[in-house]
Amino acid sequence: MLVIIYLVIPLGEANFLSKLIYAKNIFLIGILYFFGRNSNFKIENWNLVLKILISLSLFAFLISFLESLVGIHLHSFLGYSEYNLVINDIDPQGNFGLNWSFEGQGAVPRYASFFADPLEFSASLILFFAISIWVFIHSKFKEIRLLSLFLALIIVFSFFLSFSRASMFSAILMLVFGLYLSRNYTIIFSSLFIVIVGFVYVYFFSSDDLRFFIQDTITFQNTSSLGHLIEWIEGLLSIYENPFGVGLAMSGNASGVDQSIKIGGENQFLIYGVQMGVISMIIYSVILFKSIFNSAKLYLKSDNINYKSVGFIASLTKFGLLIPLFTANAELYLFVALFSWYLVGQSERLYNIKL
Image (tube, rainbow, N blue to C red; front, side, top):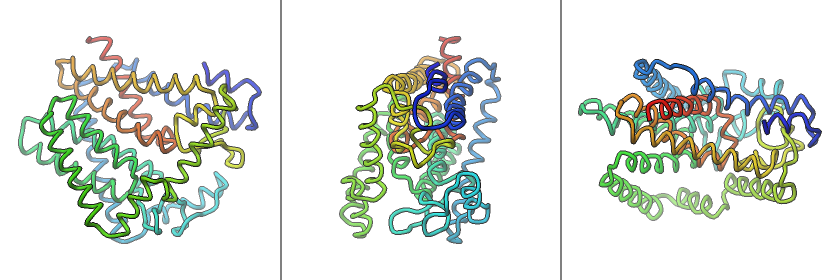
């Protein structure tokens, strides 16, 4: 209802068509949740869905690994730059002729496999990582647990190929959260110890380039981190000056947003706040945290292993996406965003029916 109101009222510099295109992006979230909430998904087929997702994660890794071996982005052969130029009116950018998201500091390549860009690839890896954690924790067979550990290592390596710091940090938090939900407290402390030792080793004994990169990231002196900070400040100032918003299609990187008039765009919460005011930020935040809480509750209280699986993976995925949501317009990552909202709808349905 809030989106519809801001779609029809004459607010902001964006034209009606741009607002309509942007509203479509938000409506998709509710539509997929609606399908999940109201469709009678055959839960016995859930294992098949998991196998398909695991196969996708392996295929994505294989393509990105081949990209890194050859040193050429797959998107260079797919007309990515031409599409951006013709459809989005964005000229080729960066050292690889694609856009800046395909490279890190020092022109280090970042790979996207068959996803739209490296950021969407890394966000999708969060879903795959949640599945690997589920299988590792709950499998009763040693062979399956070893295979899930192998899958987790592949996904971790894929994080480095896509090189998203937000998703890497999210993966660590997801692991801790998943172990906490399953009450594996001993492994939590062991994992934290390994992470701390690894961080100390990297910080004090790695190359100067890597150490300076970590320092610049933490202190916002890195170009990417500084860019996030500037966008956040711009968004916060806009919300402070316009607590009821400045209109749809006025922030973010979604289709329909004119980059010449946009305000901020590196934080999903602030993007909604800039466009539809403080109330939209509150509503979105409540929905998001409620979805994590109820999905986790389904996992903890259900006796059905398939129901527990849906709740666990939905909760972990939404929890893992929190950090990317603070650093990007992450609801644009259609695969992981829409699938996870569908899972939230399923979790809510099972939560209300079975509990």
